[in-house]
Image (cartoon, rainbow, N blue to C red; front, side, top):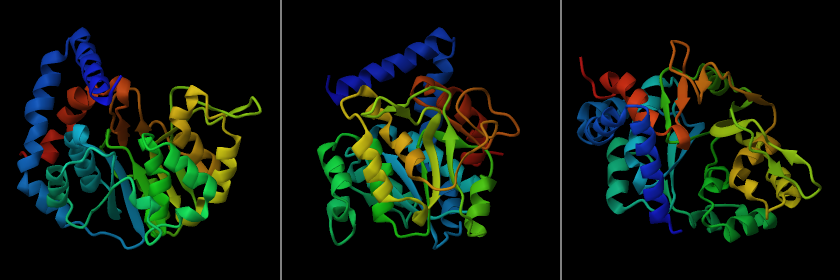
Length: 304
């Protein structure tokens, strides 16, 4: 099935979920009316532009044409809540149009849009020094989630890297991450997954269950590509679980890794006064618009 057919099927799946829960109208209203208001929100653009950007931190987000509205809401909520911000690298999934790139620049003037082949440019990246990793990246061009692992590492020389998904909304300041950046800390962070998605190794063992890569924070020298080479050599690549390979990959290679509090960085459940971020993963995507945007629209759209 081609990507367009997959997209249509996913959209129907989400709409059907909203209908079954009695939320179809609010889903459609928030997604196609309220959410679209962000594009012409000049107050938001000015607020984002006024934020101080650190020289030692890079922020990496994977984006595409089909998720532009979510991308803007997600990034806007992060910029308004986080006390530390870094250079923004937007990793295209191959579908960003020139219009999309202009929109991104209008909100984030200092951002860099990265295309999928840039990581192979020897003037920009040292990927060529890691034969196994380079081979994996070349042979899996459609594995777009690998870009937020491999490309983010090689295309930013910042001391700290923060990789976040664009289906996350932010309701508070990620103080655990901020403290590591401002205090030159050594901790790495990932979030907890409520499902079990382990990677299968050739020796019959598994690894990586319980990790989610929606938020990945690390000091660059805490991630070893030699360790990732070891990981790729162990993986049973024919197994369907390789869809989640970047989640297990981060968990395998990061030093001093800790799991962020699920109470503060959640996937399931509602938003409480303790919630910092909520990850609206694929099966719960309708709630990004039904519940998430409804909670933060006043702040993002600068309504009184």
